[in-house]
Image (tube, rainbow, N blue to C red):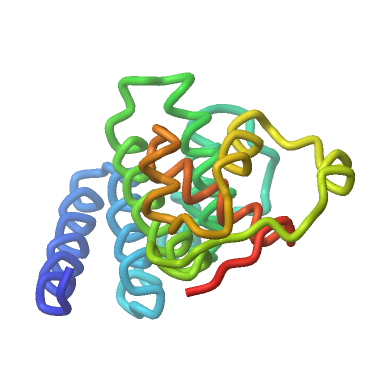
Length: 194
């Protein structure tokens, strides 16, 4: 999204949150204002609205109680998302969608977080034209107990094939393939060269 579209979206979400709040739909208001903070973590207006909800006891403090149900998981995931812990937030959102497949609001959060993470993973692997290479011997790899997907992707890495081609060859969802390659790079199993 370009800056003007983002600004318009933020304005619309702030107003939508106020409308929900005015009609007593506190959870929907919190969701809107939380989405604003996802788009602009420094947005003072959204922070003030959410602080007001906390001060009035309309929403629980994040550290109040352990998660008990899907609603609490969504709250926890939103908190993680706003703090920048996108992988952990995604896991919680996906847990909720597995339990309640009709939660379109949560599916929207899943899509938003996956989009942000996809960009992060592309950067971590050095871009789609980067060429990863295995830097560990087979014996050293055994201690990692890699999942099948990671093992399969690793088998495709030859030091000559670009990330873009590896993703295509794997037949995996691009998000899952990039996530796995990113994890292998972080673990020091692969190195990447542009």
